Length: 203
Image (cartoon, rainbow, N blue to C red; front, side):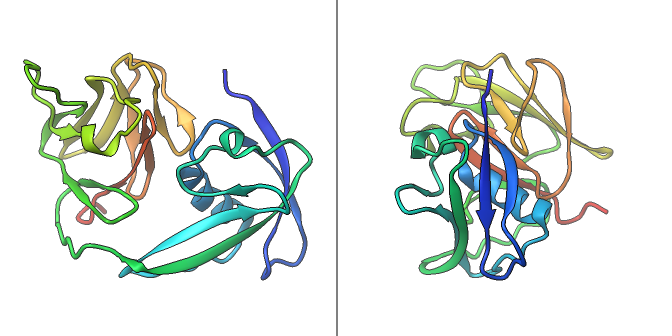
């Protein structure tokens, strides 16, 4: 079961520090936009370049790719939330009209109507994987058949396929076999791989 940490967060454009309870095992790139939205703090936006959010204290820096626990954050610590544009990391110009998943670098994974299996394709694997995350998963955290993402006219949903390291939506772990409806800009995590669900044509 995930543990939580209570951290004091502050922002240069916020009137006062805020205490917030956060899960310690969810990747920071998933938590950051949720934290900014929850606290009503301003966030940089750049459609062409990657925006990186970090938490910084005297001894600990929480960056994308790390969880709070992995970075060494402890309950009671105080962090400044910083956002900066990374002009050296340009987003690929990938315009797509249908539902898709997108990673932090802007790479697009198109989804088809019907069932889309998400997992790790391997030589000799007899199962068809619509979204193969093998090359984005350095530590092997994604299961061969990790999750099912269903796209229909009425909307999209995702469910965990009893994976080893879990499927997460907006920082919450899904129970295996229980479908979770998706909304545009939902943050998904398959093992250690973080993606965002987008559906430009949805209402």
